[in-house]
Image 1: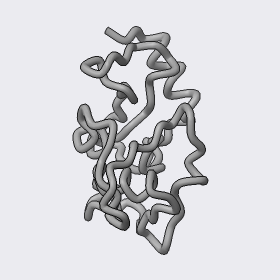
Image 2: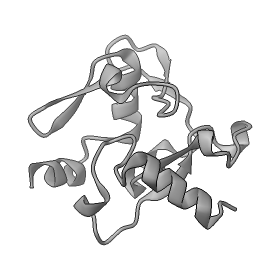
Image 3: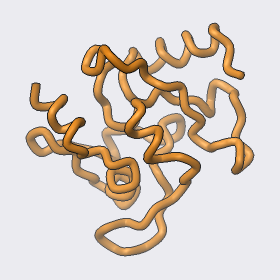
Image 4: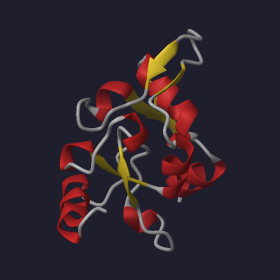
Length: 126
């Protein structure tokens, strides 16, 4: 179980913003952001601070135990974005209210986590 001190550290490090889709906690006041394991326990992940990220319920549920997905452009298996090892701006950009992948990792993460869902697009446009 993740302790309250660790939860606070994850939230502060992320500045209360979702580390995958980029939206802020204030964008969804009815649902608290989740502390998620970047590499899930089933794949050997731990509750160490370096393996934890702040995620919304949508991204977290879509990610599940996935570590990879299929890049929609190349149809190749590609690792998902890792918030502790990679820079968000290297892999993601935006066109209006939609996130776009700049790399195979970005495209794959957007696809697997469904980061342009109707709900997320609506939040970005408000």
